[in-house]
Structures are given as structure tokens and as C-alpha cells.
Length: 369
Ligand SMILES: Nc1ncnc2c1ncn2[C@@H]1O[C@H](COP(=O)(O)OP(=O)(O)O)[C@@H](O)[C@H]1O
Ligand SMILES: [Mg+2]
Image (cartoon, rainbow, N blue to C red; front, side, top):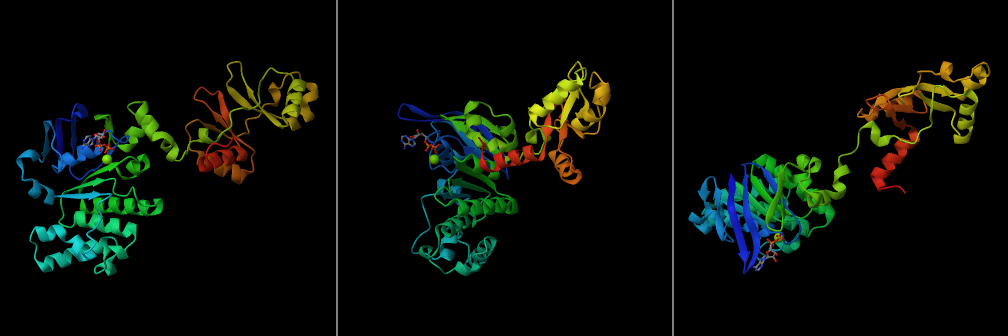
């Protein structure tokens, strides 16, 4: 457990961290996120005493880090950053074993650790290579292993993947997440990339101008962002959870008429709209059924209003229903549409094959104009 209690820090007269208070439980993947310069790195560096707060206390498992020997402390806290790479004159194996050797593990134990670590990322064959023989992604993988090698309960990672190409970054994110779950570490990870945070975090701590704006699970933050800045940061990630409800796939401009309308008038509306059915509603705009041009041609002559021609043959669903059933129905039945009703039985829209295709395209390629 890592606790920040009233932690503040200034550079000169400029306050950089303002009264930080939060607790990170064991075994959690915590992502510190926020705009550049908001104090993420400063916050992180206080955990392993690379920086000291002006006021306030940081505790690990209840013990004030300030009372602990710095070097000893850091040996039990893994640290991965973007810029500092591997030692170029050491092999991969030697790089991984830097901390175990400092901790005076014997040679056999060190060899074992190298094997275990390399197996985790399927790089066993690289043990005796030098960093210059590896790609950037492979080097950063070894950097992560180096931080994990002495099995520290806590690992700090400061934008460790931001210099990598997107594909490599994604695969390293997957690896780190699965390592964390396998090894049950507490990871504090700095990022300025919300998609990275959403992918990795059990808990996101959102910082702005030296303060914690919100600390919440990714789901909670997506659903209830604390303010506009958080919302903006979430930005286009909100719809990343693929829409699955029927209202995301319907069109809302539908042709509907009241049941007391005349037959001729309805026939004309159909002709004008190039449709062969209309939705029919009662006085309170509640859905009653549909009328078709076929029925009007066949029976319409003897009638004044359309009411006797209303049929309840169209499939209806409710706003909030899963869209999949409607898709299946449209594909299997050959029906032209499904009617979507609001809770009060008024018409919300209709789902057609075209409206589905359009919504899917918008989700894949952005707003179709
Ligand atoms: N050594 C320093 N001297 C003066 N100001 C600093 C120093 N280090 C960081 N800062 C300032 O402190 C603020 C927070 O920096 P930092 O924690 O690195 O932010 P982040 O990691 O969120 O981008 C920034 O405004 C930065 O310019
Ligand atoms: Mg930083």
C-alpha cells in the first residue's frame, strides 16, 4: 500500500504539487494521467525518493519512506523510464541481473532469474546479445524485465513505451498487463495517453496542475468524468465501448401518421416519401401498428380513415434492447424494418439494414457526413 498524505512541493515559488492525498492498494495497476507538466513524474519520483516533498508524508506499507535508506528502498522498487536504456556494454542477461547482483544473489540464482524473466516475454535466445543488437521494442522489454528481476512488490513506470511505434507499444502494454496479473505487482504507471490508461489501469489517478482531479476505475471515469478536462481527455474514447443497443443503429426520421387520417392523404404521403408503409399512432402519439400501400389499394376505397387497415405485423423492440436480435431478425426474415419504441410506447425510430450499415460505418471510420 502506498499512501500520499498532504504531499506538496514547489520549485522556487511555483507550487507543482498541491496537497496530494491518495492511497494505492497492493496489487493494483494504477495509471497517473494528466496534461504535460501537471506533476505526474514529480509525484512518481517521490515514491522511491528520487525527489523529496516539501511537506507531507509518503508511506509504503505504513512506513514513512523518508525514514528508509534510499538505496535500500530503491532496490525494492522497480523503475522503468522512457529515456534511460540498457547498459550498452552489458549483455541482456547482465542487464537483467543488475539489481539481483547488487542484492548479492549468487550466480546460480541470477542465471535462474534471467531464464525466468526471458521466458516471460519469449526472448530466451537473446540472453547473450548486446542492447545494440535488439530493436527498440525488445530493448524496452528487457528494461521492464530488469525492473522486475529482483521481484520488487512495487514497479514504477514513467511513460515507458511512449517512444515506441504504436504496434510495439500495444504489444508491450499487453505484456506488462499480463505480467502484472501473473506476478501480482503494484504498478504505478505514468501516461499522458488515455487509451493506454484505459487499457492498463485498475485505477486511474487523473492529475491537473498539481492536484488530483479524480481517482476512479476506468469504467467509472468513462461514465462519470469529474469535470470537463477529464471528459475532454477521454475524448473520442467514450464510444470505444462498441455500441450494442438498438438505439445506436436506428434512424429517427420516420413516416408516421395518426390513426384518424384519411386513406387518400396517407397514400399520397407514401408516394411522396417513396415508402410503402407508414407507422400509425394514436392521439398520445403511441405506436399502434403499420399500414401498407397494398392494403390501401385493396380496401381503401370503402374507408374514410386508415384505422381499420392497421396491422401489428411489424416487429417492435424497446430503446435499450440489444441490437443484435434486430439485426438477426432483419437478415433472417427479410423484413424491411424493426420499430423501436420508447418506454411510453411512442416511436423512437426504426432499424433498417441501411441504418445499421450507416451506424457501423460511422463507428469504423468516424462521422459519416
Ligand atoms: N527541476 C525542476 N525545476 C523547476 N521546475 C520543475 C523541475 N522539474 C519539474 N518542474 C516543473 O514542475 C511541473 C511538473 O513537472 P513534471 O512532474 O515533470 O510533470 P509531468 O510529468 O506531469 O509532465 C512542470 O511545470 C515542470 O516544468
Ligand atoms: Mg513526466
